[in-house]
Length: 195
Image (cartoon, rainbow, N blue to C red; front, side, top):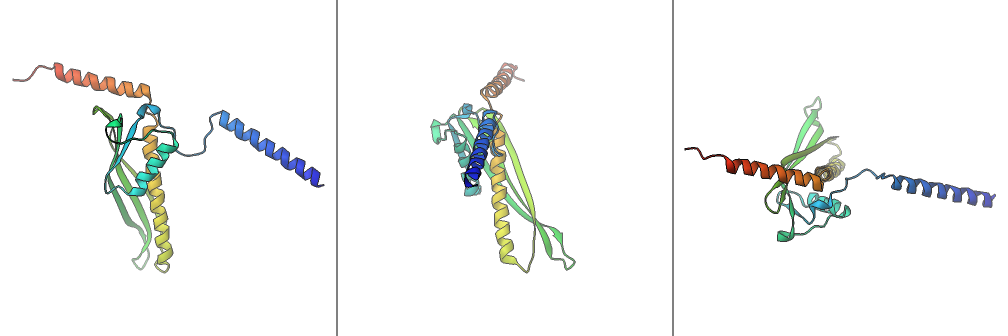
């Protein structure tokens, strides 16, 4: 009996291993951030206050997990700037006693990607995420913990949105951006000056 169970477990283990290998071979990935092109390397991550440190750390971690080389200062070919963080908390539902029954939390931030020579790869873009949670004034401490957890989830979602914005930037896309920038500059330079 035990020998049969051992063989069944072994067969199940082999089956799971084969399935995992097959999924990996076909390009399947668990849900998460898409890969960021190595064309953006070396990359500088520039977060300025009031952007929360956990948001910057989350973006940095996702970039590192994706194998992106991060540097600082003049070594960088591209500068990822995260600015103007705003956090908002509003009552989205009230009780018959005019007390808050539900809050909506919203976090937003500006994202900008610029090459070392000043070409805007991603112009300043506002990213926003929000989430609602029920509020119970009889259980304030537990609801404060819940709000803290929701705030962390919002920061993680913003970090994912930032990575998703970087994912489509391939070497070909970078060349298109440079070409269009050069055409715009050439067109401006060749226009006759107005008297």
